[in-house]
Each structure stands twice: as structure tokens, then as C-alpha cells.
Amino acid sequence: MNGHLQVFRHAPPVVQGLCYGRLDVPVKIPADEAADHIARQVNVPPSRIWTSPSLRCREPATRLADRWAIDLVVDARLWELDFGAWEGTPWSDLAGDPAFEAWAQDWKHRAPPQGESLTSLETRVRSWWTATQRDGPALLLGHAGVIRALRVHLGRMTWDQAMASPVPYLSPCSLK
Image (cartoon, rainbow, N blue to C red; front, side, top):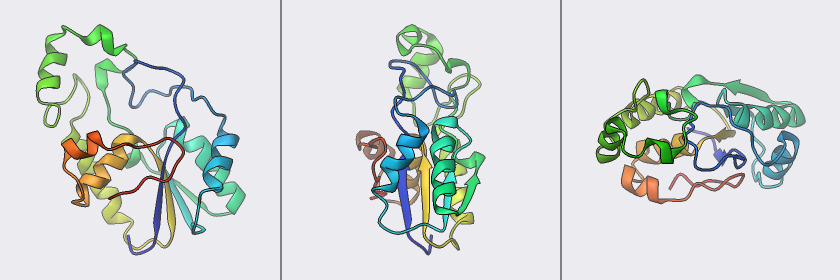
């Protein structure tokens, strides 16, 4: 991206211990408050906001775009990892499932049943990144998986490093 990209993760979800990626889960902070929290941390006014179709990203991104009177682009390439058949299932219920055990042994290459692999996520995110190179200052309000995929795509981390690196809620996220 030729311009400056500021990256933020959505507000923390209310649910804990639940497998979710594409599932719209409620968050602890209303969209208006989340937008206010992000706005206070923005150091370069963006000309555009990019976000996932997920409500936990899209709703505060819409508030920010309205506040700053800038373009909002909702892009399906910015969805979180698709956990397929496991969406909405407590992680504890997946223990002992042979498909889960196989995925856990090779999480970098395998996909959950009817879901997608990290390779697919990285391909989607790379496609978005490549298409947005001409953008000016922008803000991305997204998911941990997308932010980690950007870190990997940009060659700044391996997947192991990216998974071990924090992606804080409602705070600027470094791509380094």
C-alpha cells in the first residue's frame, strides 16, 4: 500500500471458548463506543476505511466512515477464517473429534470440515492487499486472522510467529 495503513481489530466478543470466524457474535462494546475508541487513536486521517462484512467490524467501521465523511469499503476478502462445520461449536466439544485432531496436527495446511485453510485465508488477504496498493491513507478494521495473514504475506512473520504475536482488540496493530 503506497499510503499509510492503520490496522485495528474489532471489539472483544462476549462469547468465550467458542469456535467462531464467520459467525456474527455479539461484542462487549457497542459500535458507537468502539468507533470512538478507535478514532481517539488514529494518527493520520484516513481517506477510506476497509472492513469485513462481519457485524463486529462493519458496524463500528460504518460509524467511523460517517464521522469522517469518507468511503467505507466492505470487502469479503477481509472475512475471518471460515471454520465451516465447527462455527458456533464450543472448542471443548471438538476435542476427540478425528477431524479436529487431524486439523490440530496440521493447522497450517488443513481446513476444518467445510471450512478454509490458512493458505486460502492468506490468498484472499494477498488479493485484497495487491488490489489496494494505490490507496492513500486508509484504515482497516478487521479480524485477528486477517491481520496475521497480512503479517505473513508481508514477510514479517511466519505463521508460527504470527499466531504467537498478540492482536489486541480496538488498538493499533502493527504489521511488523
